Each structure stands twice: as C-alpha cells, then as structure tokens.
Length: 346
Figure 1 (cartoon, rainbow, N blue to C red):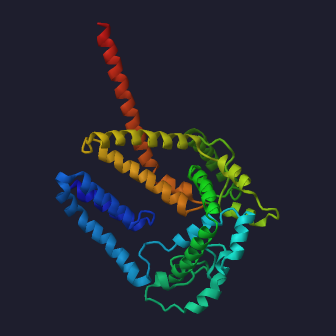
Figure 2: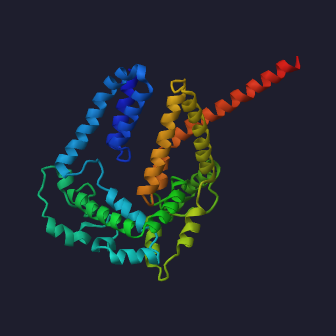
Figure 3: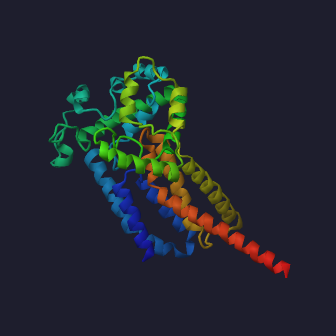
C-alpha cells in the first residue's frame, strides 16, 4: 500500500541520515494516526514494521556502544556552535573548560591520547569500528573511540552553554545565516589546483548562485580554509566581523522562498485547524512539508556550525514542491477572479 511505501522510505531515511532521528519518525507516525482516525489501523499496520526496523538498529547501537542513536558526532557538532568564532569571549570559555575544549573537534586520535589512554577500549570484532585509523593514516571517524570523544565534547558543550548562554544564542544567529548560504559553498572544491577545471566549475558555480540562489557577493569559502585563517590571526575577529562575513553570503532568493513558504503554510494550516477540516485534500501533505521544513532548519542551526547550508539542501526539493503549491493556488485565485469579472461584465 501507499502507507507502507511511505513509512518504508521514512525508515530508509532515518537509518541512512542521522539528522532524521527515530523521534522524527515517531512524530510523523503518531501524528498521521491522530489526524487520519478513520484509517489509523491501516497506518498502524503499515508503519509498524518500518518503525521496528529503525528501533532495532537504534537498540543494537545502544547495546553495542551505549548510545541510542546512529551518529557519533553530535557532541563535536554542538561544541562547534559554542566555540564557533574564536572571539575573546569564546577563548575565555575554552580556558575555563576542560582540556578537550582546547582540541579542535574531529582532530586525529593522537590529539586525544590523554583521554584514550585511560579508556583501553576492547575490540568488538567489527573492523569498521575497531580500526582506529584508516590505511592511509587518517582518522577513522567510525571508530568506537569517537563515541567516547563525542561524549566528552557533549558534556563540555553543555557546561559552556550553561555558563555563557548568550554566546550560544549569539552564535545561533551566525549558524542561521550560514544555513541560508549557497549549498555548494565550503571545502568540497578548492580553486587553484586545476586552472582549466576552475573556469568551468566556477562559471556554473557563479551562474547557479546568482540566478537560482540570489547570492551576489564573492563566495565566502567557509569551514576548513576559513577556520585555519581564523586560528592564525593575531587580533581575533569580533562578532560583528563574523556577522558581516556570514551575512554578505546569504542567498536572497532562498530566504525569500523560505519565509514565503512559512507564511503560506502557517495561514493554510491555521485555517484548517480552526475550521476542523484537517482531512481536507492537501492539508496533511502540506503539514508534512511544513514539519520537515521546521525540523531540518531547527536541528541544523541549533546543533551544527559550518555545514548548515548542506543540511538545508536536503529540503530544497520539498521547498520547490511547496512553491509549486503556492503558485498553483495563486493561479487558481487569479482565474476565478477573471472568470468572476467576466461574468459580471455580462
């Protein structure tokens, strides 16, 4: 049935993208049963097996690693938010924190030897998590060690946020701006290595950013290159410097589309709830689009610093569908008005 296919795809997404947590699946599952009371048995039967599949993997991870999740990076990600800009206030926070705060997250395991020496983690018989480093000497981010490193960063991040919550809230403003940057921005392609390829890629890059995203400034290559430059400067950038750097790179068309969708969906869903007509055609799909838009946005800006635009890219297809609904609705209103004016003239 359509319900089973829908829940199977949700389960696939929850298992392969840690951004979509088990709680995300559960919320959609329960909400759909509440809103579709006449079909709740079909929904329950269709969603139970995919739900158990996701739950089983989470339970397996809990048994194997002690973490009820499919990701080992949350601690580092949250720590990156509170220590994003390396301003004097954040440097003070790092100094009053533990030693782990002075180590850049996602560093090589040798940087964490002080902590790892005390752990003496036994092998689990699973090469992908037992192997500490890759064959080329780089860090294996799937290693079981990273789960414990993540716990250290998570504990430290929570401690620092409690100590200076205004720094965290302030940095969320920056992660929100980065969320609306072009999604091809970052460290995935560094210009200068192949001049011939640079011309081709930069041409498409510029065209897409200007005419699709509405980003008109020179690309601000965030993350690794920028972070390295940040750590070299003798006079730390102020928060205002960071605000200007991240703000000038915002994709104007994406921001406009995002808030247009928020306003339209809020109005339509408010009308549906107040009129008690939740089963009206199109209401539940619109609610699904709206929920995912808010979910991905909030999780991204609250728990990530650097790759926020890449997370937003996941919902761009949903935004296109939502814009299509808005355009169709607007055209319907215009046609009705033209037809009404035509009838009144006769």
